[in-house]
Image 1 (cartoon, rainbow, N blue to C red):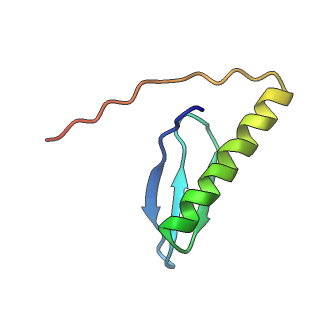
Image 2 (cartoon, helix red, strand yellow):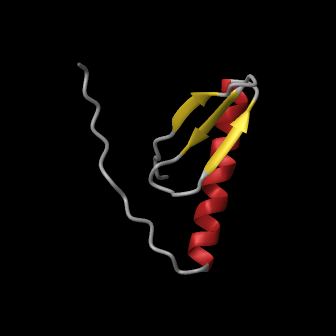
Length: 68
């Protein structure tokens, strides 16, 4: 199992949307955070499936959290 980081945003019209920085163009939206989590799993799985079918290498990057 791989772990990907997602940036979650509150949508102006309500609900949430999220993007996965390591997977350019991998975004999804939902009404609740629980739904967003499920949608992210589906979006990431779909992205990785298409990447594998097209022999696209996913470059992994490191994430560092910094408190200021």
